[in-house]
Image (cartoon, rainbow, N blue to C red; front, side, top):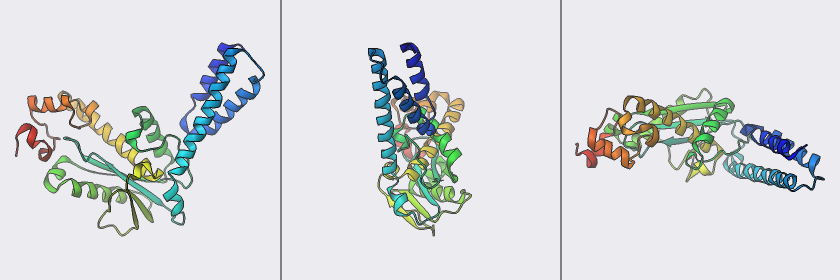
Length: 263
């Protein structure tokens, strides 16, 4: 096999979907075995890349296993549900929460707090979670509810909605940093939980991707605010557009008083 063909084969192996990590490891090990006696510099370089890729994969899987501490701690529970929100801080759009129950012991590479994951990987993880999860529920409150009742009420109410929208009743809730009132299910509040629990991280991904898609739809109706890029947050361009055009229907009046001078 010439070096160009070997490089193409390596690329094909490493381009596999995230959940086919065992297939990738097997393919890389086979590539190494088949070519380890070849001393050509180009071949040696490719095999070094393959060994490094295997090491990175093993480290990533170990990182994700480390995020299963709470799921292992409460392994006697049948359905452990992670809950997280997105959209507390934006100037426009809803606050949105997701509740996710993952199968026990499922390993999803790259799963992490949505803020630590690239948009490309968030989209891929979203599809994996939606196809793998035992149950997913989403809750949402509009800017009007936020303005009328405050972000704390809107956020926790959206969490209750997400739980109600699950088609399986959980027996434990792992929640990122808050306690949800008016819920009878046992709760464990975890500070920075979206980086410490696979269940909360999965909820973080679902919430982020779902809300981003909503804001991208709003961008078609209100393109002057740049919602497809800022997803409602107070970027310089967004603030400038508010000053120039004033608010649209999805702006949170309680958040923009100091920008546009509205009561």
